[in-house]
Length: 266
Image 1 (tube, rainbow, N blue to C red):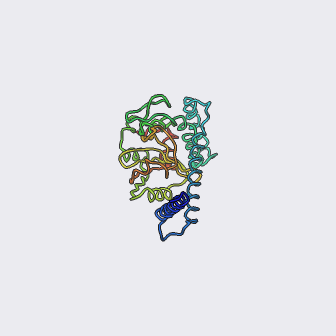
Image 2: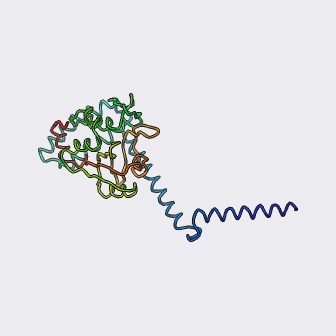
Image 3: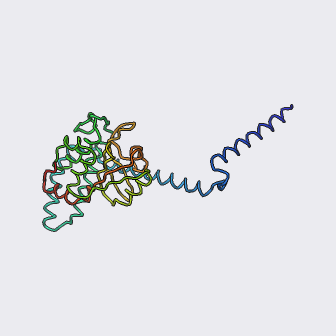
């Protein structure tokens, strides 16, 4: 057999392998090449990339020169100022919600990004020691000026933690058979603002909806195991659960009234 015959057979074999590969990937009954499917996939990838970029942008909003102590120290004056202006009728309660949320999300929480997770972690200082998911929530809420015992709150189950933070308001319990349905349910349920989210019996975090996008802010027990913000839909932790407990924080009038009045919730 001559060399040219061998080369022809090799080329034929390559074409057959390519054909069978394409049939395996796209199926004999699908459009081929699948231009519509590829366009949709490309669009989804672009949207997820934009969402991830948004998460990184939001996570970087904190002032790197501002200390955690100064962020906490400002809360007393913030609360006093808002309370006085609200009583005078200079601002609405909706404005108080915005100020509270922005301070917690942009000035308190970002200092914690990168702090290592551990099951027993309970540090009160960002990036010094380790912190579990429950202690991340209870510590940041306490440091935002909500009067609570961070140890008692952190040691509660997700549903009991939701009950404390709700202050008697509604708790949305979601049970879906897929993460896609759960995400769609949560997306319909939520408006702009910050929420507490409990993952069945095993995990807790913050749920942030900003500019129509949903983000999970939590002390992540999965690798690399640290406090982070990530798109909810892409979160491996979110995808591993089917039951959730969601409570409004930004839009919880009772909780924020307790905050304004320095009332103890736990």
